Length: 229
Image (cartoon, rainbow, N blue to C red; front, side, top):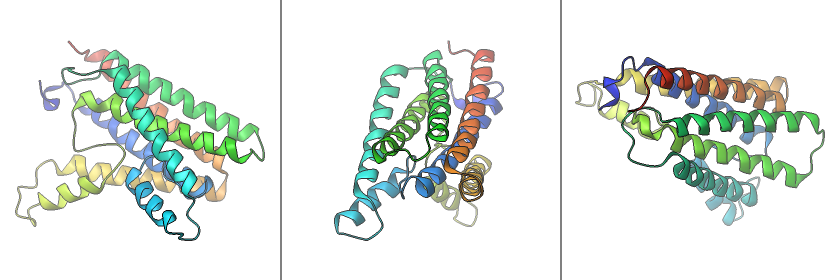
């Protein structure tokens, strides 16, 4: 069964777009408030690790390595929980993984807001857990099978949108999902950055957690209406 055969698919599409927005918000928080590190966009972290290894100033090696390892660990755990071989849709294990991620994000925001002047090891722990949640959610939504909305990166999305456009010699198919993913990532990043700059890092994380929780709720409702066989 293909993703397009889900009736209706809008619930999953909306959930994926909200997860994409939450990634933008989380990365805004981690980059602006957790010492120049991405917890969702691992392409940026790999580049930063390379820059840091040759001594480029202002780029912390440890933070980026921890974020990378946290993301990998989260993806592994999420993959183990969700499993393989599901028909297109969202199994119960995926819903549970997303719900757990929402709880972790809200918990981290609460701890951060309650603990003024957290020690560096605590901030590194927050970085690792944020990255783990981002990695786990990728594994959780994999059974949906929508490759146009990957929730964590938009480079391939932008490339496919451009390459398969009429200007690029294509038929312009599936442009709406791809363009929407790019827009939602930007909206999430904007909200996260605004919250960090005008409010605080913990409040910005609450905003990101709220978006993630909304995405999880949409996924839960849709999964209940269209259970995996």
